[in-house]
Amino acid sequence: MDYSDILKKVDHTLLSPDARWSEIRELCDDAIRFGTASVCIPASYVKKAKEYVCTKMKICTVIGFPTGYSTTAAKCFEAGDAVANGADEIDMVINIGFLKDKLYDCLLDEIKAVKSACKGRLLKVIIETCHLSDEEKVKMCEIVSHS
Image (cartoon, rainbow, N blue to C red):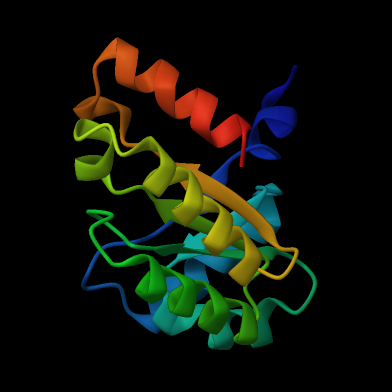
């Protein structure tokens, strides 16, 4: 595997709360130049970025970011809005509290609902492993694989 093969699997990301369009545009230019899998950007820039890159690069955004504590309905709205604005991929953050409370059915239902709201776009599930025990990581892998 060479450098370019690795970059094809990387989301070039800028999610800082003070990100500006000039930085997003530069991120897109770099992603196209280096051939990354996508750019992952704040939802507020999805439409403008999609118009800027057209089909040269996939646009990804995050929902429920960064804590995952949004309601399922809010996450579904965010996903649908992102898709309507041109997002090719959605990264959702799980509700870690649900996992800690062992509300596994709630987590699975939420993932399925958000997946439906993505209307066929790729959904990636962020499980924030730094906050999880090994047992919780395994459980989340099981839950995600059933979604």
